[in-house]
Image 1: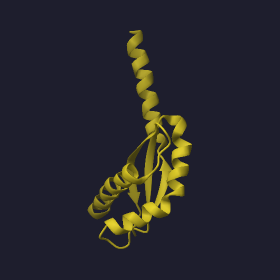
Image 2: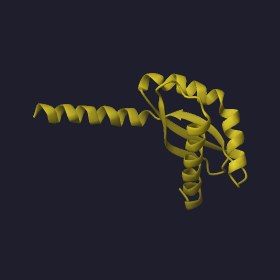
Image 3: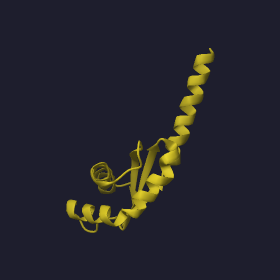
Image 4: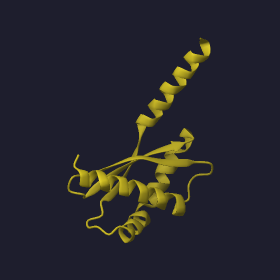
Length: 113
């Protein structure tokens, strides 16, 4: 991955995270974390990977984010001084769930010893 794409991924992660924290109505008790962003080389789109705690709220959170994508995209277009601003695509980060499960198993093994 070239340096420019890497910088854009980091910028998008910060800005989208800020927009979600300030302006999105999240399900009660849910916390959304942006785990990573992968912008396409032509910057036409960016996959924004999210993790939701508690896990049961994931579907509701994704639904709300997808419903509010227009407003989030518009705010992002205003904030960023670049063209094109990649089109945001929300993606469930299944990897974070697997990491959590591995940590849970390791904790259980440690307690048994």
